[in-house]
Length: 319
Figure 1: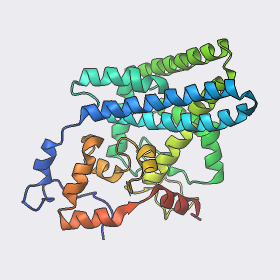
Figure 2: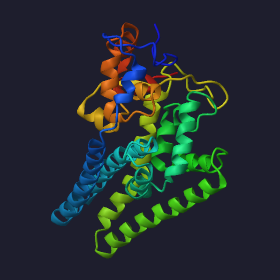
Figure 3: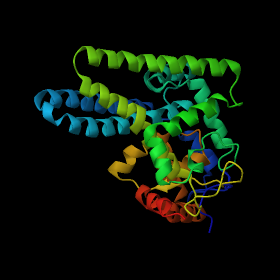
Figure 4: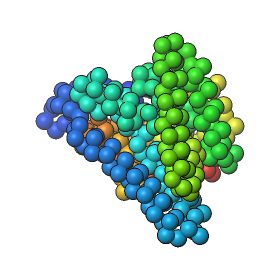
């Protein structure tokens, strides 16, 4: 039985009344209020964790190592959550006006990560066009989940390698590469200002927590998530997917409180997103419900659901 939605046309899927998905999708406008509220929620928790690290360190300074450890992991996790909304903006689903969409994304989403909205959009669309092929522009899932690779993601080696690869990517124009460089510098300056203020006010514990959170745990969570979404669980560790076809794999994850934050902005329904990329994550549940009316797609939905932990176990156990 087919285990993904690849190749199924919008016209061949109908609900019980005979309405095709091609017609139904025209009603699926983004719920912009929810998108903005989810972004605000991320910044609220980022501020909350930051304040707690500072407050607890002032109250119980001898436990500084606990605050750095726990705080950096949580800040990295929340940063990975917020970064997923760059993806939503990349599909023009943060605001109905495209210029406002990109302006909001640039200042509130891209800047902390040193990314250009236009460059991200172009690179990401190549991911949709060439998923599972050596031409894919988002290829972290080409890597096996070995102890060495996990160490590389935690130490920033994989992030540096990815940045250099994207810098040399022929997909971007000269102007887009220039804008990417400007945003990267702007992102570094933003973090430099935050760190300078924390050091000057004597909150060195928080400064270290922030560096570890954004510099190490954020790329770790982001990379692991992409691998869990796309990597073939039957692939061995030796296969080089930069040279051979990986195959178009995208998954549908069971919803829990944890998975809904780890795979925020609809990433838990990644298989549905790849089937119809332009639809906002705020409507992916509507698409899933629609697909359950059709026998063929309902079977795919039911048979495809998995969990992040299940995929992780299989990938770690790969030969």
